[in-house]
Image (tube, rainbow, N blue to C red; front, side, top):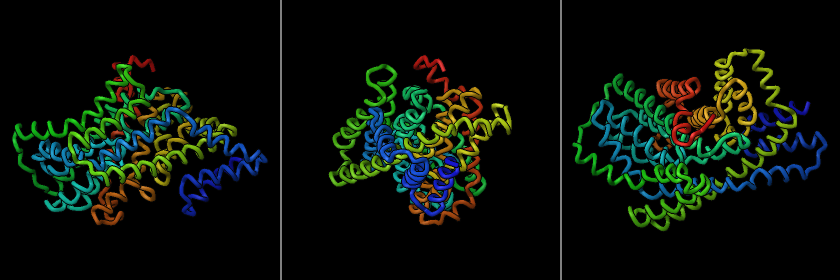
Length: 430
C-alpha cells in the first residue's frame, strides 16, 4: 500500500503540473505521514542528502558554464567551427554541430549550450536560407553533448546517486568517446537532411584562417584539457577541478578575451545561484524519496518484474532505456538521475553492465528527455530563439532522434566506448 501511495501521489502531482522537486517532496511526505514515521525524518534525509562535500563541484561547474555563456566565448568557437566544416553541404548545419560540441565541452550544460549557440547560429542559418525547423533541431540535439563533457555537473550528481560505486574521475574520462560518437551521429543526420533539402555548401576560407580561428578559440577550449590533466595527474580532485574551472574562466573572460562586463558577470552569478538552488532542492527531496524506495525495496521489485519479461542482458538493457526515455519526457535531468539510478543501477550491474557504462547510458537518456515534450527544456529554448512552435519542430525531428538513439545503442551495447579511456588513462578495473 505504501508504494501505491508513493507512486500515485508522485505521478498525480506531476499530472497536475506541480514542479518536479515539489512533486517528489510532497509524495514522500504523504507516504511518511501514512506510515506514521516522525516528521523529523523528512528534514534529516534532506540535510544528509545535501550536506556532502563533493556537491561543492555543482555550483562551481554551473558558475563556470554561465561565465562561458555570458563571456563571449561562443563567438570564437562558432567562427572556428564555421571555418572547419562550413564548406560541406549544409555547411552551417555542420558548423552548428561542431560548435555545439565544442561549447558543450567548456560549459558542461545542454541548456547553456543551446542558449549560447542558438542565439548565434539559428538567426545566422535563417538568414542564409536554412529552414527554421532544421536550424532549431540541429542546435537543440547537438547541444546535448554538453551532458557528457568533463564540466558537466550531472556527472557529479550521477556519481553520488550511485552511492559511491563509481569514480567521478572515471566518469569524466568515460564521457569523451560517447561525446564524439554523439557528435558524429549528429553530423550524419545534419548532412543527410541537408542533402535531402538541397541546402548549399559554403566556401573554405583556407588553412591560414582555420589556424587563426583555432588560436582565438584555444584559450576557451583549454578548460577541458586543464580539468582532465589535473584529475588524471592527481594535481587536484574532481571537486577541486570545478573551482579551478571557475578561476580559469574568470581570468579568461576578464583578462584574456576581455569580453566580460560587470553586468554580465552579475547576471552569470545570479543564474548560477538560481540553478544551484534548484539542483540542491532536487537533491534534498530526492534523498528523502530514495530513503523510501530503499525502505520498500523498489530496486528488488523492479528487478523481479524485469526478470519475468526476460533474463537476457540485452533485453534488460533495452527495457531500462525505454523506461528512462519515458520518464525523461516529463522529468528534469537531475531528478531522473537521482530517482532512477538507485533503482536501475543494481539491475544493470546484475546483468553485467559496469556502473561507469551505465552512467553514460543514463546521461544520454536524460539528455534525450531534454529535447522531448512536455518538459523538453532545450527544445523550448531553441524554439523560442527560432520563433517557431514545438509542434512544427517535432514534425521533422525523426532524423535527429535517430542519430541520438544510434549513439545510445552504441554506448549501451559496446562497453569499450565508455570504458576504454578510463582503463587507458586511469587504470580503471571495472
